[in-house]
Amino acid sequence: MSQLLLDIVPGWQPSLDNFVAGRNLELLSALRHALSGGSSERCFYVWGEAGSGKSHLLQACVRAAQDVQTNQNMQHSANYAHGGVPPRSTDMGAAMVAVDDVETLDDAAQVALFDLYNRMRDSGGMLLVSGKESPLHLKLRDDLRTRLGWGLVYQLHGLSEEEKAQALMRHAHARGFALPAEVTHYLLRHGRRDLPSLMAVLDALDEHSLRLHRAPSVPLLKEVLQQELKL
Image 1 (spheres, rainbow, N blue to C red):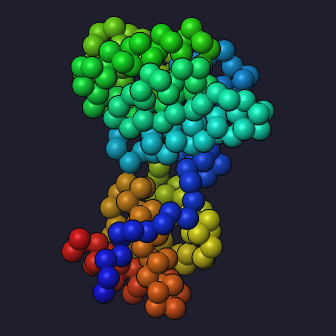
Image 2 (image 1 turned 180 degrees about the horizontal axis):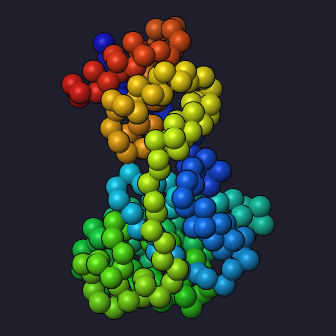
């Protein structure tokens, strides 16, 4: 059997609409408000454990900002960077910049983020930063930690089992197939705990079922999970 979890074309892109908010409705509302121009708050720091949805949320906000710029025929950019800071040449006049996993930044990147914070504040752009810990506990430069704490700070809460099931059902629907309840329950019991990994298995199940011309089922899911362990 071919390797199922490699070279899979994603069926959808992260968006605010397909983000399952769970206990994070206030954060989602605040971000939508800021993106629409209805808020004067321009700096957000979001923190939470791995797999809680930080990357999804940051990428979704960048996508939303890009859509706004396109709809308004504006030339400002919106950039996303994971574990780094976009080059200064790309963020000049940017409407929004998102920096993911701030705790992985080296000394030079921390200086670059500090400068970026000041430029975005002066230009009125929106800066969205994520990390695994609250600003108080980040092992970063003191001046950078202070700046990140000045904006709105939200803890991103992970999803409950019921909310994960809802997210998986939405993901399956977006890919164009029905996900039987027994498949969802089996995946939640035997798959990895974080949502990105669960989504990846679901994508692999879809590919496998299409390849074999069989509907998604628990036996097919078992084959996918067994193959995942071999990769």
